[in-house]
Length: 315
Length: 254
Image 1 (tube, rainbow over the protein chains, first blue to last red):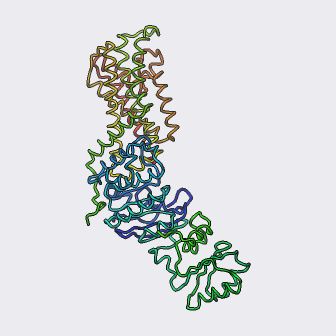
Image 2: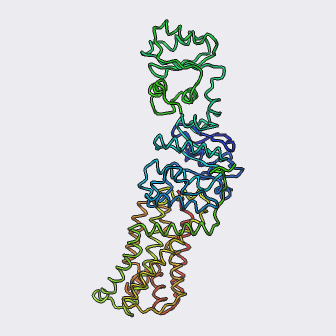
Image 3: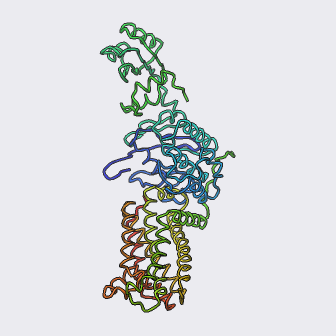
């Protein structure tokens, strides 16, 4: 996909299994929305092919549209329309719509049914957008950043709803730049960056180190100079050391029974007191970092690491 | 599986979709204060002001002022709804992503257009009822030629709606708002919609070819003499074709 000279999505190839939740994960500007809108038939790819439910989203759009639900990233309603009025309107365009009162209740829109769209909060507008995507009882829903702008409570409700959709036989394709969202919800994750697919797999496959160990080390005082090099030497060839910030780093490399002992020996030699030491599990943030050399989220590493260390309540 | 969300997709019958869209469009149009002003209040003011002021302005009319102004104001009402209201509403629908959103619903674009036209006709029906009631109360004594009036409303709506959509599809929402209101005011003053072409002197030969002049003339012919103004209807048809071609070539749905 190109916009003028700019290539937004290129050489992207991915498949979505029925009745699964697939997350397209990537930083802002990675091409997530373009990918989704190509599936929805809004954009015609200059090269390559897209099939949704076996149909060409552009040429066979009329056959496809009743079978899919679309949640746009924002907008999509008249400014003066009341929330329930809008949902009822979309419901009337479908043959077997869901009960709109039930749906609005499930999405916590019961209290703002008579509120004009322009007066809804960002989170309420998001939830109404999700309701509009679901009301026609689609086989596939495409949801673009479903929880952006939602408070934690609404996020959790939305996650539960998306999981229930999958369990009821709906295929869910979502974009997100939230790690926890992808990790918690998705059966399959496709990480894209600069319009290219850089990794695919289940959360477990993506975060498993393979035969490699991943060690996150957080210490109480800044590391002494030259730490990455001395650590690399301590572990031997094939080891990668990435300094995340002045008090935390990531070690990946071949693992064996002596790995942990090497870390603690290195700490002793360098007079470094570990604050936390995590073994084995990489998270998606690490995966993205290793694949691109960049952070995915905008939050500074030390903060996200610290909060994890401090016992960030795992979802 | 029989959960709450178990898929059962399908589009409603097209007729039902179009009806839903038409009702929605007309409801929203009448809810909006400015649009209501444009649709009903201004025409009624023009009607009352025109009739009471006709003598003092010193325009010589061939007929009773109310018999001349009532058809002209009905033409003005059609113009305000089909052109100005439609252009502004559509401009903001593009801005707010409504058209994009509906583009992924089962409602096809032809259905969206049909719904818009249906919405316009519903609003116009209301306008005709209100304006006619006021005019009759003021002593209007029409000699209605229903065929001519109906053709004038339908072709006038087609011409102005296609031009309104052209404007809304080519410009940004705010620019559409400004342009649609400006054109409305210019045509109201100098477009021979409310006043007959004859009131414009030599300039009348020009304004009769404008959609406003043609619609006004066709309505006056139909409601004063019960005639069918074929030439004016032909002018409206030409504008409708021109507007449709322009819109089809330039309109961007997003």
